[in-house]
Amino acid sequence: MFKYFARPMARIAALSGAAASLVVAQNGPAETAAAEEIPQVTRKESVFRRSASISIENQHAAYHSRFAGKHPNLMVMPVTPQMIALHTIIRDRTTTRDDFVFYSNRIIRLLLEEALSTLPFESATVTTPTNSPFHGYEFTSKVVGVSIVRAGEAMEQGLRDVAKGVRIGKILIQRDEETALPALFYKKLPGDIAERQVLLLDPMLATGGSAMMAIQVLLDQGVLEENITFVNLVSCPEGVANLFKKYPHIRMITSFVDPTLDENWYIVPGCGDFGDRYFGTEDDQHGERVRIFD
Ligand code: PRP
Ligand code: URA
Image 1 (cartoon, rainbow, N blue to C red):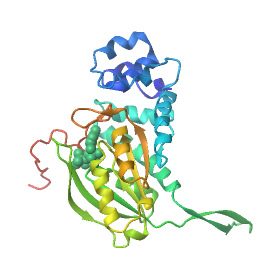
Image 2 (image 1 turned 45 degrees about the vertical axis):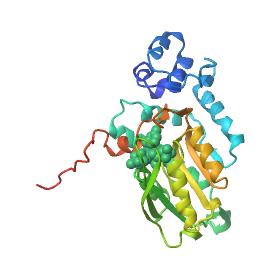
Image 3 (image 1 turned 90 degrees about the horizontal axis):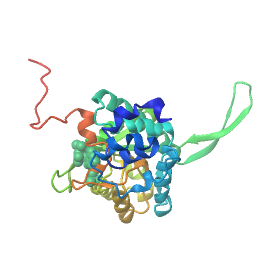
Image 4 (image 1 turned 135 degrees about the vertical axis):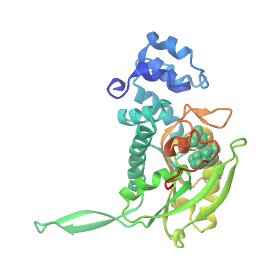
């Protein structure tokens, strides 16, 4: 399936760690030389390289299945060829900002649809135009989205698109670039949040520090742990373990669990700094403002 969505030879140079290993496994020795030149931060995670005959989606699914037993409240999205193709684009360091935004939004939409499907429904019967009953469900949950600013804001529009009129709260948490320790700067949440199902939005889970801080803010506001669903694009075992150790009753939906973190607490292979790539601030060393009026 890979060949329909991506250009393997063009993309291999941009991949690192386990993702490069994965492409090697799929494409065989002819491409191994290119991959060998890439720093193999996560070579120890050789699960991806074990067999060239297993499809890429099965290799990822097998890796993800390791976590299913460990964390019963963790749901990893089905690893379809489409999902892998979307991830292949957002993980490619040569992807333009436009494409990064577009394809991240596609994954976000899939994740949010899945997240809503896991919330409680009640049975309901309607009458169709043929005057016949249709026995179904109605969505009765009161939902609120809470984004962990800044990167979590990238998920707000996706939520608005699938949950009409949804309220959205914000918690501004920033990770210290040196220590990766999170700091809380601001929060604004609906007054009745304790009665709602909360979809906590952040595309990246690295050490788990930011998500844990946000969850504590929600609990202090009276939200029940079991009413929190953390919706996330890319995670890693360290963050997932930290999260469930402290808050075992929350639920988490992610589209990918990557193998590990690097020495700067970035997810590898990951997709780099999500917020910078999504909002276009990769080069912004000085916080310059864009002038819209002269
Ligand atoms: C990123 C990301 C998470 C956090 C994950 O935000 O969006 O909030 O890091 O890392 P952790 O699990 O180790 O806490 P960052 O603080 O870089 O700010 P940004 O949203 O402005 O990019
Ligand atoms: N934040 C990001 O945006 N990416 C990472 O890999 C880790 C934290």
